Image (tube, rainbow, N blue to C red; front, top):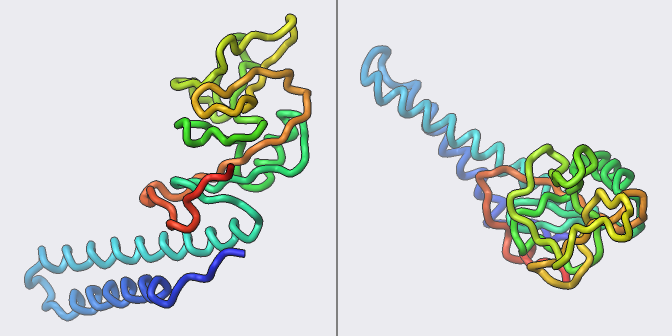
Length: 202
């Protein structure tokens, strides 16, 4: 299981919360109509700190929740790798049921070294590959010669197939069964994961 937050990290949110309350109290002590700009600044600062506390506490709770369910945390997202095989659509349905979706690969570091369904397909329009959220494919990591609809088959879904973090994608018939990987993005303000959770799987 995941290690519990240390005492110092646990006290961090409490410290910020205390600072926010102090700012609120300081602002309330100002005479009405006196130093009006300073009063606005104090309230603004308090609101910002409180929002940060809420986001931080939410991240701590969600991190603990996902890690206990065997998710992996890397660079702003949680990842779940299946232990069974399903079709592309069934795999996506599983991800959606977990509050996530099939992975959208934005960099070569997200190319896991295992055969897996990813959230890419050209099911809507042959040859026009899009991610499951409707965004177009800007950067691709196709293996040389792919996608190719091998032997004239209707290969409309993408997988990670080859052990190569640069050119690892292959197109495959969507009804084939495969392992899959779900992705759940966290708040955009956090860009780096805790050090002990940063390592990607082999």
